[in-house]
Image 1 (tube, rainbow, N blue to C red):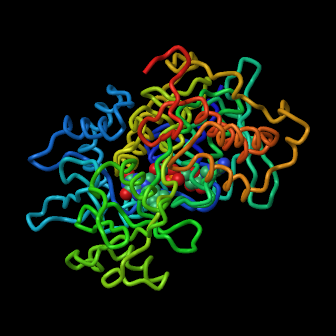
Image 2 (image 1 turned 120 degrees about the vertical axis):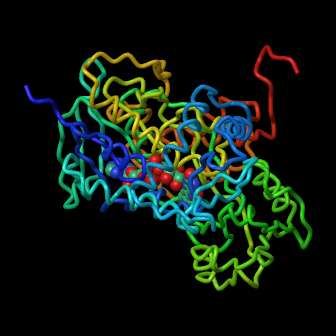
Image 3 (image 1 turned 135 degrees about the vertical axis):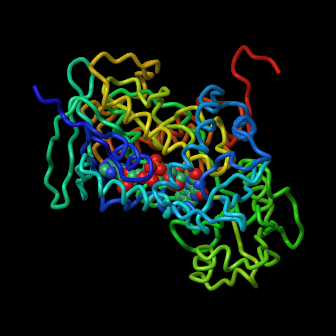
Length: 484
Ligand SMILES: Cc1cc2nc3c(=O)[nH]c(=O)nc-3n(C[C@H](O)[C@H](O)[C@H](O)COP(=O)(O)OP(=O)(O)OC[C@H]3O[C@@H](n4cnc5c(N)ncnc54)[C@H](O)[C@@H]3O)c2cc1C
């Protein structure tokens, strides 16, 4: 009997890499818009981290990742992923990614916060578009990938044993189709669009987490989200990003004219320092005027600021923290296997253990390529016995569409309200009573995917009373039975 097709969902860097690497068996690649539409991968400015310079090593890259993640990452995963980073960059060079070069012809490496060495390979300040476009070109040329654009996955189907048996898809004309399959790779990206202040595409609503959790997949660390300290504070949704590489090149943060933080500390530290200034009523600005040839080196940023009437070479740029990246997600093992047979997750939708409680800058494009390749290799050879190492989900978090919490569940909460709720309860600083109120507000609406994922996030934040990395509890209560 012919094997049912492998289905990959999402055409950011993780999904594209997975589809490309599914050679020779191949896959169907489903994506919501046209290829790369709605992908945060296209928006990455900084680049991809890899220990490539003579004064660097993969061990140092691993150490920086571990430290930036507040020592909460999985050390074996960190060592494995940072260990292959140089090879990943070489692969991207083979795919003709036009990385910037130093005068001696080697790849030019930028310095970013939390890195003890200059190690970010970049293509100007539009690195994500350069890398993702190259991978999309390879996918378009690959005879083993059947691309289906304008195919939004609305539901995963599971059989009586709980294993994946199909996906429900909404096509461009609104019609629904079921594709039968026993193997699905989720590559649906992050969930930053669930916050009112975000740098993510507003379509990044964590739908992959909803799809997976509704069929019983385990999720972890959903409360561990990263706030980028320097989103341009103008009336735009999503907020334009002022890349960390600007600070690496010498840009300074000033509050009412004075510096207040070491700009190259990990993001959680800088974001908290900026937030403190703002809550004390001061205005925080990024001063990039001292950077040599700043507009030439950062043309994408220059364009973004100009669109808001600001000149990068002359103006101080108002900034505030904004939701940027999700460290948690669908829990997976080294091959991308989730707790549900037949379901893999790769890229930002997954929780691999690489990032701990705070992602080191420019480690996520790396993770997208590494996890995409690993899941493809596993999925094309998998023969039916699911030996994953991920523990089952907490049943209290699993809400199927037919088993909703309350009658009001069929009435979706307006997205704007979901976003305001997470913004105020799950921002840079959190406390128990506000989180409890958010959980109570969202609970009756978990039949709706956006509210469901927001509920899972708030619930996870409430369940973690201790501050760690990007999760900062102002009440910082110790768990019962633990003394200080
Ligand atoms: C402004 C910005 C700058 C960044 N800069 C950097 C950087 O310099 N370096 C770095 O390492 N990281 C950076 N990041 C983070 C990085 O871009 C992302 O973590 C990474 O690209 C995620 O890749 P992905 O493939 O998992 O998801 P994405 O690239 O977000 O792709 C998700 C895909 O899934 C599709 N999709 C979603 N739901 C469905 C559905 N239900 N059905 C069908 N398709 C669906 C989307 O349309 C999209 O194609 C940045 C992020 C942002 C927002």
